[in-house]
Amino acid sequence: MWTAVKIAGIVAAMVVTLAFLCLLVLVTRPAVLLGVSDSSLASSVNGGSTSERCQSSSGEWICPVEGVGAYRVWVDWMGCWKGVRVDDPSARIDGCIELGDIVTFD
Image: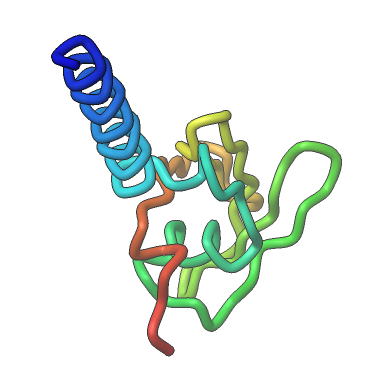
């Protein structure tokens, strides 16, 4: 009897731990679970604005930034990105896609 209760307790603890880890990944690096989209990357690059969309081309993205110009952006597997401005390669930006870039209330 007590063996079954112990096993059920261990299984429940493992399920809760896995659910917590998935939630943690979803909140901190959602692109790992949900992928990168043109709107989520554009929101991240533009600081929350989704008026512009990024275009994908052979492993890199071209993202227009309001009032600045376009950036060539590379995204890693965790949803973090680095970019250089198309007309001025010395201008660099970087960041990571966050949950607020994917879940918007526009």
